[in-house]
Each structure stands twice: as C-alpha cells, then as structure tokens.
Image 1 (cartoon, one colour):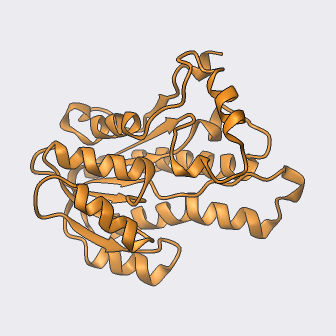
Image 2 (image 1 turned 135 degrees about the horizontal axis):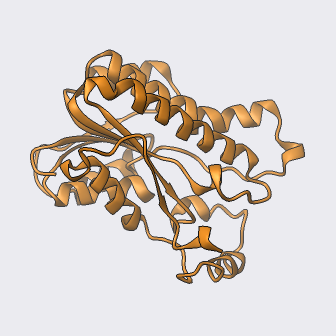
Length: 242
C-alpha cells in the first residue's frame, strides 16, 4: 500500500475505521470521511504516518458530496463503506422507510463513485472496493428485506461499474461479510443472547471482526489483485456452508 492514496467512507467506526487504520499501517495515505466529526477525528488520531486528511461529509447531501469530490485529489483506491443497518418486518416497510435505507446503502455510494469517475479523480489502475453484505444475496433473515435489497442493488451496480470502468484501468470489487461485531449490530433490535446463539451457528463459532474484513479490502486495493475485478469476496466464517 506504500505510496497509494485511499479514500475511505464510513471511516468513523466499524469496518471503515479498521480499513483506514490498516491501510495506514501498510504505508497508504488516507482521506477519511464520515458524518460524525468527533469520531472521525478519533480515527484520524489512530492512523499511522503523516499526510492524512479528514473530511466530514454526509453522503446523503448532494452539496456535501460535491464538495468532498472537489477537495479530493487523484486517488489510487476507494473504499465505499458508509451505510446503515435496518430491521423491520416486511409488512411495515413503507416506501419512505425503504427509501432511507436505499439512499444510505445504495444511492449515496453509487453517486459518490459516479462523481469521482466523472471528475477524473481516480487514477488509471485505481481500485474500488464496496462493502456489501451476505444479507443481500445469500442470507434472508426475517426483518432484513430493505437492508438486503439495498446491498443486493449495490453489488449489482458495482458489477456493472466493473465492466464499464475496465477500459479505464479501474477495478471494482465488493466484499460480502456475514455478521461482523461492530456498533451497527448493537442497536437494540437484537439482544446479546440472541447474537450469541446466532454466532454459535457459524462453523467458526463466532462473528467476524472489523479488521478481518479490512484485510480482504486491502488485498483488493493492492497490486496483488491487479487482475481481479467484478468479484464478490465472501467473508462469512463458513456460514454459507451451513
């Protein structure tokens, strides 16, 4: 990762934070963004090396996304990690509620990537990694229809982007984690006991850790994956084997 400049969205916590920290440990220069300035500053303080930048941005606000792109120089890589969780039985998922999830998990990262490409912020040979979810294509847990649909849409869009951006030398891949122990899963909708019982169903008998997803992201960002594009990398502790 030495010499690479990487933009990471959703870098204030969870997988995004882990990706930013580990990229910096391997020599990359980071541009990190998120909505919470205080938590984003905490991530910035944990980055190794110098020259990193912190840009607060709400990806749901067009003007802020445009400002983020305008203030970003040439990039070697992008990690699209910002998103929200959402659990609600299907019959209560109104159009407005589903639209909120789709905006955060699908429209926002897609629009950011579109503008980065249009404004020529991605170098030839750049790598884009979007964080999707096994909940979008493999696991169909009750109450997660809107979340799953948003992640499935994101994965599909990234595959099309991979095909269309290949002539520019830009690679696009996704990672598909199963349950990762981040603040996103501790929202009060599922108890700790229910999480523990669910984790026991995984062949490796636990949920993943943010850094374990970050390692896969780093591989896809690196030159080691120079011939990898349009791929969906499953990171699920063996859950899809069950």
